Length: 335
Ligand code: AMP
Ligand code: MN
Ligand code: MN
Image (tube, rainbow, N blue to C red; front, top):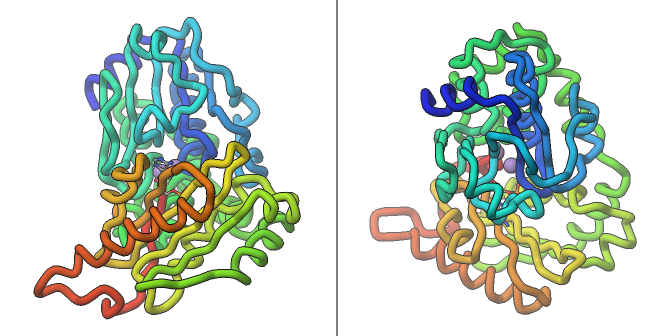
């Protein structure tokens, strides 16, 4: 924390970037960090390799976000990025090698690729950013607080995930006291689904399958076209599937334009899919993880399902409940 603070205080022009296919924690952390550093008089370039969905584009300062890779900035900050693969086109090896990289994140699978790594096992990266903003002595304003509360409510699915404690509720109160409009944010995030999302989910839900305590849905490019969907329309579907009673795991397989398959994973309480996600080239948290594997769909489904079923079975060691016989239903963790 102190090294990150010192580096940022010494910086003049900071490049801040979040992960590809950004969620509310990625964008909230990006805007919160950027706005706070701007208040300190720093020049900031705010970047995200992929476009923002309408759910996020309304946030104050979202218009500042560009998709260019870093150029002549003297310091790089990554937020909510677990490994360099998640930077997509924003990763330029030479630029990242030649200047300080502050890696701010909350993923257990973080590869510590920064020269300074500020990784805390909190439900959202936005909370890690908040800690740093406070250490920098920047008073919270409405813009910073709104961005950070967006991050917190995205990754906790509005305080419904198993990792929420009074700390997150206290943080939310502090952010609301600083002007963050909780009701507005939840309205945008949870009550403004585009029609394309509803159509896409309809197709996917009509064909869900289950095996060995795992429920899954598949989204093809053809389904994406038929519902005029963009990748972000699939967000949230794995968490919804994970709310099915009696399931230990939930998966959504989505065929990308390049034919590779993006897999979103959710695990029930007491389970951990972060290891299998890493083994498949991805990462994440115990109860919310993901990876991108080679297509076609048929091969990806077999490979990932086998690995996930084995991982969930392998956990059912003596003295622990058998997979499928777990106690109370629970929400899958956030992203
Ligand atoms: P999602 O299912 O997209 O909400 O993502 C759940 C969690 O898994 C997030 O914390 C992501 O950072 C992580 N994740 C998803 N996809 C990947 C991937 N391809 N590589 C690494 N981590 C991923
Ligand atoms: Mn994220
Ligand atoms: Mn996150």
